[in-house]
Amino acid sequence: AGEAIDVRLEDSKYVDALEQFHKEYHPKFRLVECIVTNPQYRYGGRFDGVVELDGPGTYGTYLIDYKTGGKYPYDVALQAEGYMNCELATFLIDGSLDAPCSLPELDGARTIYLGEDGNVTVSDPFAVISREDAWTAFKACLDLFNINQTINAALKEEA
Image (tube, rainbow, N blue to C red):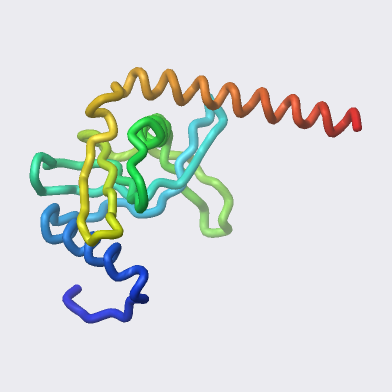
């Protein structure tokens, strides 16, 4: 917003990278930190945003996820695909769940890597890993998670 902010020294380069992202990609946020669910596969989560972007090689509406530290091409592809196969949770005034609604139409997903050097990299999580492969891998990981939960519960009952 053009206003100065106080930033801890150890965070300043990440803030510089975020500022670079805003200058280069002109994000217009449509949704931020929303809860999504997939009733069929019984999972949910919270994504960072759905954003209209206008920057180098990226124009349209994307599900975005911010990352700091290293790059995680496999993990972010599964994460993005998992979110993109969900519905947007909506809530009543009393906080209870209302009927879900569809996510906005998306042109894809982007991972926003904020570097400790102050630079930003915007990456398509499906540039190498296809959405189909990401969805298959996500469901396999979900199956493994669920069977581990079942086994651990059975072991606790036995003890």
